Length: 66
Image 1 (spheres, helix red, strand yellow):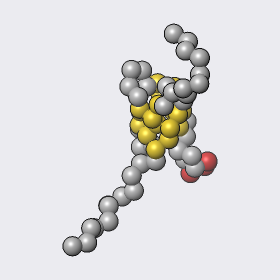
Image 2 (cartoon, rainbow, N blue to C red; image 1 turned 90 degrees about the horizontal axis):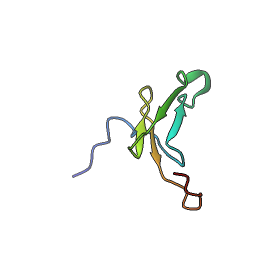
Image 3 (cartoon, rainbow, N blue to C red; image 1 turned 120 degrees about the vertical axis):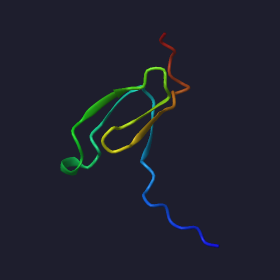
Image 4 (cartoon, one colour; image 1 turned 90 degrees about the vertical axis):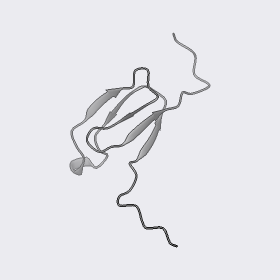
């Protein structure tokens, strides 16, 4: 039995070192308006336009600023 292909590609996953990110679709003129997101207490956020998922992964070498 063969697997049928997924109906669409999975959203792009981008690992980031900060909880505040922005997205413009990455397509220049083919992208979307630049939007800003703050993850707050979560460890990820998805763009409301293009479904890119930004995943927070802190830099283990960065100083701790609380």
